[in-house]
Length: 202
Image 1 (cartoon, rainbow, N blue to C red):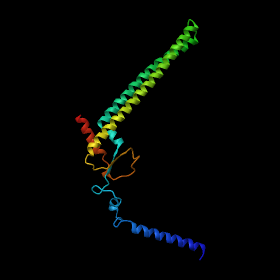
Image 2: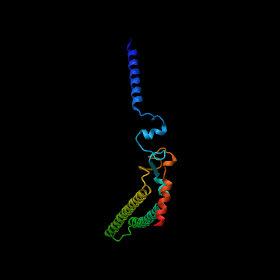
Image 3: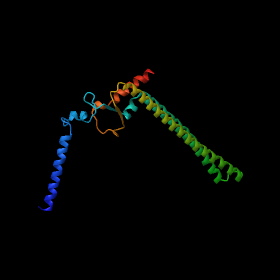
Image 4: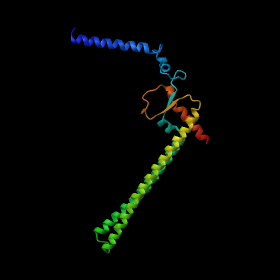
């Protein structure tokens, strides 16, 4: 018996042993697809797993509070941008005036030119500080909004799932977490409707 024949025989014996072990260790009846859940030791709810998911992007678009808060935040961003642009345009004009005066020797003294230059520098620094402050304010407002949304969703889901029908509720963002699922697992519309009814009642 050559070396190749020995290797083939060893592989065949290993395959037979593996099939033997699988056949006698798997529970009877577990080969059917509908019984996979029970064989795994997980109780099913009306033929489905006791889990659900909701699409967070759709929730943010459909939840009235999220829409109003987003609109308010965008309005605040626009006001901040208008304020900064107005101040920046004024400063730019003042700097251009300074440059023209300096190039045409319009200042009565070097000290006068230096004083004006320092004033403009200070004004530019104040504008940069204002921009940083407004940016931080908007970031804090956004964080506050996210916390409010998270609290609102958590409170609603506690009531929505009070009967314990779902052992797990997942979040999904544009198919980032869940690539494919049956329609019955998506509770997004029901959550949006319930949260809106709760918000409108308040």
